[in-house]
Image (cartoon, rainbow over all chains, first blue to last red; front, top):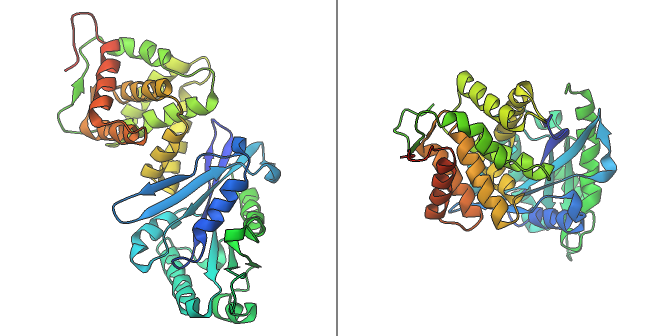
Length: 196
Length: 166
């Protein structure tokens, strides 16, 4: 559910990075922010309450062009992945136009990844949305670490919907834009169908 | 739409000077800043809800202040857009994002004055509206007293000589 600002002629899309704690959501956001030209982006904002932190920024991806005379502005959001921050995660998912699930490729984190996907499905259900209904991609992160699970194992555990998947090492910037572009395509396709 | 006692109440006749005061604070050289101050004003004014007549008053005020660029209908549409933005992105998130577009001290001070006057379109400023301005001020590392000074200064701009906002 994108938000259209008729005055500034912009369509604003909300993209949420989801995943278990320490999987690399923030590293993704920071890399995109760091590599986006200053004139195309807003400030990175960290909104903290006493216990939790939401990190977000918005930007105009220049190569995405325009939809019916409106510029597209992507708002990238991430929230802490720890289990006890569920209320915040649920709130952030409201109105999301697309979700990137960042999975931690370490074998010891497979269970946490599975729980996080289940939590994502549960929280989307609160808005009557099914994972299969929205633009959704999976990023297998931390591929640069030794002894990671194979992509086949991760796929088996996390990708029953067979959505587009990307390997990444977000801290080094590897695979970050590929993942975002992979999500951008279906988000833009959805936008093209919407009435403005 | 608040039933609480107003924190600032403009004297009779001050409303007629609101548009000119808002106009004087409206950025004309920077569309991003204009968007930011409009949204800040709307976030403050809508802090305790806005009924149809308050929206109408607000749109009329902003039309009078910026009519060269936007008319009443454009503001009605814009308010609906901003409602949607708040719903999707969150009120606190929008406030944080909006204040991030205000870079220098003078622009920030004028934005708080602008938002205070917009929130006073009905002649009053209530506690929830002031709370939004104080929260915005916190992003500039200003304390509540500093924000209150700016609010009082804004009110003084539309108060006739000898009169006074309370």
